[in-house]
Structure formats: C-alpha cells, structure tokens
Image (cartoon, rainbow, N blue to C red; front, side, top):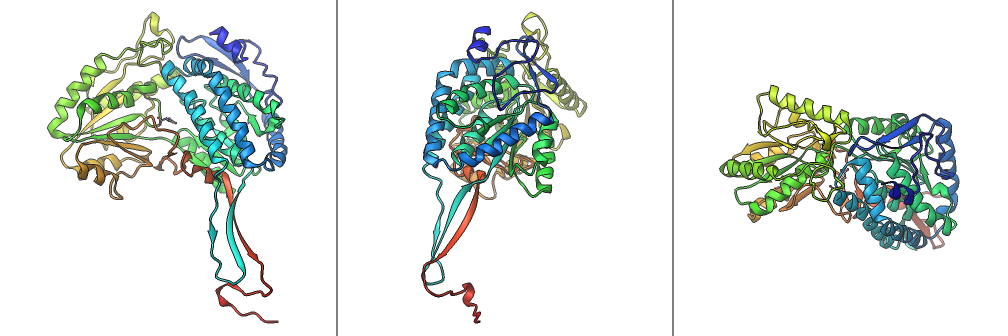
Length: 508
Ligand code: UN1
C-alpha cells in the first residue's frame, strides 16, 4: 500500500499531508483517515477553515474568468488528457478507493473506469453543447438560444463513490466552461487528494489555472459554506436525504440552483415470468455489492407469491456462497462497511425488523476475529418484512435485503412506488406486457427503471438520479450537462423597422 500511496503522492504523516497544491492548504482541524479494511491509519489531512475556503473560492472566481473563454472543444481536449491520466493511474487509484472506502478491488477499479468513461463522454460533449434555433414571429428577426457557463460549481460527494461521482460532475462542468470546488466526504479525503494530484499534471502542462479545481476537505460546515455562498450558483450534492434537504433549503433560500442525488430504496419485482438464472445473480450483486452502500443498492425484493419460496431458497443458497473479507483479496465478494457508525445502523435496522415481527431467511451478524479486525464487517442478511414498516421505508446503508410477496402486478408496482425515495427500480420478467406496464407512465416512479437487469451499476451514458426524496437531480450522461450551464435566448433584428411581439402597436 505504501508504494501506491507514494505513486499517488500521498505520504503517511502524523502532521497532515502536504500536497503542494496552491488550491488546497488546510489550516483547520486534522482529519484522520482509517481504512475500514484493517482499521489502520492511512494518513491525516488538515481540513480547511473558513479562511482557506475563501481563498479557494476566490481562486475559482479568478480562474473562471479565463476558463470560460477557452473554446469548449479545447476544454474537451484537456478533459481528454485527464482521461489518459486516469487510465495511467487506474490500478493505483482503484486500489486506494478499495482500501480507503472498503469496496472490492473490482469495484474500486470499476469506479476509476467510470471516471475514464465520463471523460470520454465529456470530450464528445464539448462539441455538442447544442442550443435550438426558433422561427421568430417577426420579419427580419432571428431567434436562437445558446448555453453559457454558469460559474463555480460546488460539488459535495459521498464516501461510497468517493471519486466517480466527483468526476460525473466535474468533467461535465469543465467542458461546459465552469470551475469546480469539491468537498469530498470527510471519510475518504485521501482518494480526493489523489485525484487532485492526478489532474494537476494536466492543468500545469496546459497552463490552465489551478483554480478550476478547488478542493476543500472538511466536515459538515464546508457543505454549509457552499450552500449559503452566493458566489456559487450551482451546488451539486450526493448523499443522504437529510443532507440534501439542508443543502436544497439553503441554496433555494438564496434562489441558487441545486442538483440533488440523494437516497434510494430500490426494489426489484420478480415476476412469475422471470428468468431466475438471470435474476438471482443480479439480485445478489445489487444487494451485497459495495456491502449495500450504493444509493442504487437493491434493498427490497417484491416477489410473486407463486415463486416466493423458490426465490427465497435460491437466495439463501447463493448467500451461503458469499465470501466476506478483505476487499483487496479478489476472492472476496463483500468487504467492510465504512465505519463503526455504519455497523450500528445495520444493527439498529435488524433489531427494528426483529421487533416488528420480521423473520430472517439469512441471519444478520457482525463479524469478529482476526480477519475482521476493523470491526466493520457484517454479514449480508435477508429479512421477510412488510413494505409499510418504518425500517423498510428508510434507507439503511448496509447489506440488508427485504423480501415482500405480491399477487398482481398492479400491487407489485404500488409496493415498489410505496416508499419516499425514487431512484432505481427493476423488473425481472419475460412477459412483454408486464415489462411495458412497469415502464409506462403508470409504472415505476423512479428515475431509473430497468428490465431484466438489477437496480445498481448504471452506465455513465444515461442521466443518473431520481424523484421524490431522491432529490430530482440528474447527473452524468444524456443531457444532464444542461444543469451546469445557463440558457440564454437571443433575438436579433436585422431589419429596418421595430415590429413588437404579439402585434402590439406602439407609436411615438
Ligand atoms: C451512488 O451510489 O451514489 O449505478 C452512485 C451505480 C453506480 C453509481 C452509484 N454507477 O450503482
């Protein structure tokens, strides 16, 4: 690991990590990053105080003045070079993601692949920031719209995807001509610093001011500074619904824009017409991948009553084959939770299930022993529950899968939609009518609705996000870029008279 930290220019230090970055020099409290894999200290980071914050935002404001003038395809070329850098550092960064956050190495590498993919996407996008032209109702008038950069984008990201979610926002924002100020999760500061180092080489060699990429390491107060700061027209926040409500209210209070990607409570409907050999691995990956800490994690299974016992038995068998342990060991499927507080949430949720009369098809357990020294390893479990129970309505960031029975598809869709969140959803069926009903306007109410694939593991090419308490924002692919720009409608009169719209007469 030391080799990897050296390559990423993160040295272990008891006195904070010196990055040599002008855009980040913390004078605030020290934040220690412990690995949930083995409980060891990876490094300590000085967080930013308010003065550091203002310095970074000031640098971002200055950088915006030049960055917005760089032609978009040229900005795209710089993002292309960043993609090359991430290709170069994929193994090292993926390994650090795995070690600092605790997800499997495969998923750590997958996360860096998402960065590479969004860089490629953004390069193409840099030549496609299209606006429409309209036909004016007035003679010798031309109307069109154009998209301009909006300014500083504040990015608040969560521990579970410590680098990919940053890149979805940043790479788009950059080709759009914006500059970014990033507040990573205080649980994963080192992966953020590593990213900052990786992109610095590109910024330097292209003479781009460092201020296009500010980094603010710190706790909740940094999120509050960003949310209340009128210098920041857009705040993109990924994390809990509680955090998103606070950000949304603060940003809304000053009529700024927020882009919120918050909690999910994702369900898969397993119809009697499902191809079970396809469904079972999708369910298991969705429920236990990233130890249940994705916002797209499969939390609820809504199973047709005629196949309920069969599906349950197959899942119990599949869970029996799961290997839990060090995520850097490629043999293991499930790593640790992020910290002990997450273990407590898992314990509290399973206790609530028990108290409400739920039964466990696969028992929960906090694992102990030499291999689980960090105290953050838990057993993925399966509980038989009712959808309306508060614990089932709530997103617990842990590998707890809830089983629910249904009789008719209408009922299944109502159950699937019957939670406060609306991020991801799926149905397994080979029946065309069922699939189409699920996808129809009267079907799933989520931002993501899949057929015959699970709820997690979305590709970057689609718009990512969801409805209701998930916050309504869309990041990543499709036309999500529009949130990062301001639209301007332009009407040009190239005639010799001044006709007014709506035929209004005004004579002097
Ligand atoms: C998240 O958990 O915040 O679709 C993002 C997925 C990943 C992204 C998840 N591509 O599961």
